[in-house]
Length: 306
Image (cartoon, rainbow, N blue to C red; front, side, top):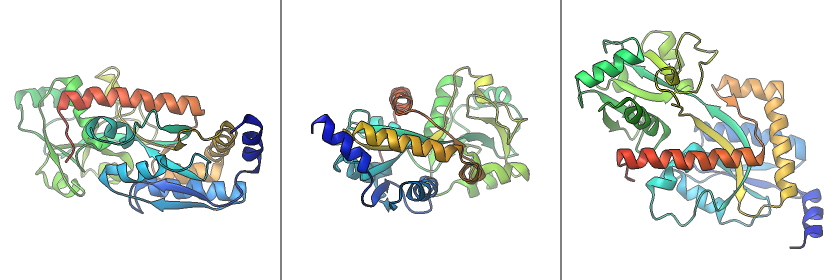
């Protein structure tokens, strides 16, 4: 399309409802965040932003559906950190996540926490590393499934700390077995863990963000012991490749306005999420950097799709 009609098209956008594909089930963290942002965008832009849940294949089904849509701004994708891990685990994907999307805006970052059952005789990360090295292959590291952020966050820890932990992937929530002591450590999301930490049912050794978090000020960041360590879940808004610049700029501006809004900000923080305002270029760089980082971890750990 010539440039002038594109500009006119962007000015009239949106003239009908917009579909936001969430590649995970209703009630999941990306679904909840997407619904909050969709409500904000609907109110700001005067058209409904409708959530379309398309789960399957660790997020690949919905991601492909969004990528194969017309690049007119009327089909968007709630991009998630798992997309950048899947790029290395699934060798037969019909799309390239970096090449085939239009990054629009960052939305939130969700921290994880390295936590152990209180029966594990350690209270610090250095003590855990020493204990793991004295008991190679004997400590079980649980996750909610192969290739999820809790799994690759743990594999990144193993790689950087030089320890041998046995990965135990669950099809559901591994927390009951962590509380029961059948598994010893996990790298779960902070929102799902915080109450167990506060009540002493689980012991937090470190957060996976680059720096300490205000919500757990006495818990160190893993990077204090393993410089350069960082592993977080994040979510953002993307479209198929070729969404007009005017639409990208408009949506980016409105998403960032939402992240600066006190009410929406409070709702996101209440979920344990940290608002992540970014330009489209910054969000694109995050995606490319994460694909590169997780490719190294997947290769190191020999992670293969289930």
